[in-house]
Structures are given as structure tokens and as C-alpha cells.
Image (cartoon, rainbow, N blue to C red; front, side, top):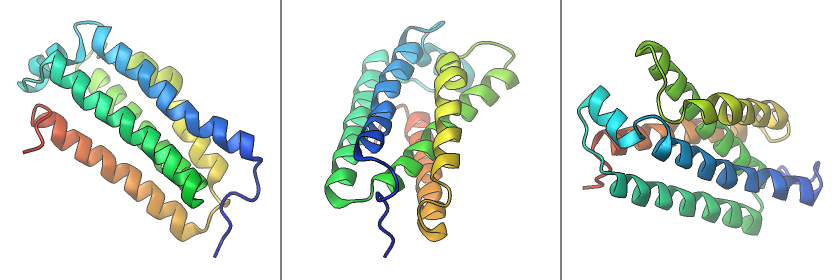
Length: 163
């Protein structure tokens, strides 16, 4: 079994891990207050009603899950794998915001934090940890991150409703 945390100092891994929930809060703030707000943007572009309150509830759940991921990864020794998962999540989310904004010819809430923070953070994380965990774990982590984005997309298009 590969010791996934052996090649980087504990403090480096810890700081890197906490960048994701911290930048998520920045991204949520931009989505909420940026432009017309993500709820109005989603209604205008896709006809999906996601109230601002429901948006904040769902995003709060996302923050809680991300923090739990950081804590569990530390506790059970898969922090680098979790970082690859987070890297894939933020990269794909950032690319989605970018493509949507380009396709619709204007700013979309979350675009600036995607371009300035999430796409670079995702790319740097994926490049940094490529080869530091086994190929199988790396690509499994990337697939999990992409899958999480798929789940988020479905949840979003359902107006934040789980059932």
C-alpha cells in the first residue's frame, strides 16, 4: 500500500486541505452577490427555480461535507487522495462556470472566483499530486471529483431538491 502522505510535510498538506473550504466560501459569496445572483441567473438561463435561501442551505451542506472530508482524510490517512478529489471538483466547477459564461456571452455569478481561484487551484493540485499517489488512486480520485460535479449539476437543475 502506498503511504500517501509521506512525501510532503504535515503542515503543507493541512494548509493545502483547508484552502478548499476557504475558497469555497469565497465562491459561494460571489455566486450569491455577484451580478444578479446565482438563483436569478439559473432561473433566467435554465428556467430552474432555486430560491436564494435554498441556494445557501445547499451550499452550506457543501461546506460541511468539504470540511468533513478534510477531517476524515486526515483521520484515516488519505489526505492526498482527498486533495485530488477536491482539485477535480473545483477545476470542473470552474470550467463549467467559464464555459457557461462564454456560451451566454457575459458574466455569470461565480465566474471571477472560478478564473482567479478555482481553475488555478484545481490545476495546481492535480499536477502537484500526479505521481504522488498510485495511478489507480489518482484517476479514481479524479473520477470521484467529476462524479461529484455531476451530482451537483443534477441537484442544481432540480432546484436544490434531493427528492
